[in-house]
Image 1 (tube, one colour):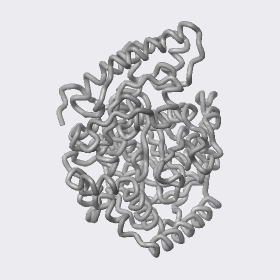
Image 2: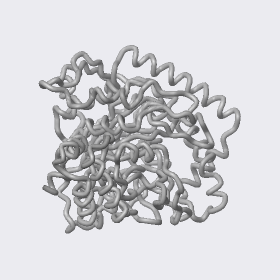
Image 3: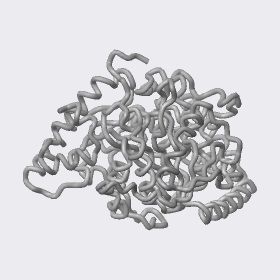
Image 4: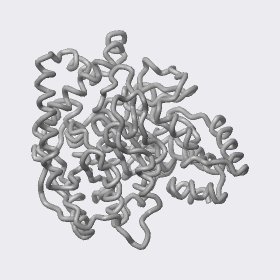
Length: 483
């Protein structure tokens, strides 16, 4: 029974709770046992409150027994990303500066998850200040990949990606500026979703117009991504603009289409590019996995052509916007604790400090041209298809890959360009499992739709997922593994 619960999706678990086939206490107990079994190997969960979780689970079961109103995630256990504030629970951001920080309130995404009935059990690991797509820090160490415990789980939502793949939990909250939901999803054979701007609000006290970073979910199935979105999507007064999508927008994706309906790929126009039209290097094993699966989209009725969004302005937009964000949000920390902040973060902050008014005029014009080219692409196509990550999961002892397909990495961001250039467009993007290399390492497709076309994006991804079933392949992970 416990193994069945660990393999079950959140959609299945919430149905079982409503049918009183399982209790929240049983789910939490199975979740905690799994952490005990595999966390010494992968180091995904870094803060844990088993006593508080069991108290919350008992309360959830009392509500169920009393016939009370149940939230869409009622009784489901979940660890949260350690960059998301959790009331009364340590939130370190992977930094020694904040190793003992205990917030007095939850971030909005955690508030909404708790309101939907989630039982908070702890926090999952992140890179320091969520910088970079490899999860390591001086507080908790390195998170490794359940499919290969000597390899990276990706980042910055790498602790969550590893927890999902290791069957610790079925879904969870993450964030994504330069691929932090998508790259760990690709590395860990799960699904990572970066929604359109404001669909899951991320209010910032420093910049109400902050658009590059997004809050989003990761899960083992697209169905669970949709379930998460029903719980947390919706406007908030702190944002100047309200997104046209709410939780109800995603409810139509539940339950799974009946009668063999593939969710609607027939006639979908897909532009595919392996290098984004920029010559972005991608390792041969990644390309081979993806190219072997390209025909699946055509088999499902899509029209696939080699074509790309014109992304010539994307690097410039991403680099400057990210640098300004780092300078604004982490500049004071770097000034006060220069020796306690990793060099990649210091570099990014200093890049922001160096930007001039002339730089920003040029970047604003570049972003405007980029958006014009986005509109032109989606006037011809419904979906852009590309590699999620440029590399397979790499040696976890590295800070980042020194090169990709023979091309040297000049900065810690170069190997993440496949995700960063898409972030610069502001478009909704999702990574879905695409298969495995002969070595058994996962790779993922990156699917990108037009602004606020999030629901159709999930529907199309779900059609591909049902046709392939790669996410159902668990890692051969046991406590005997050691990174």
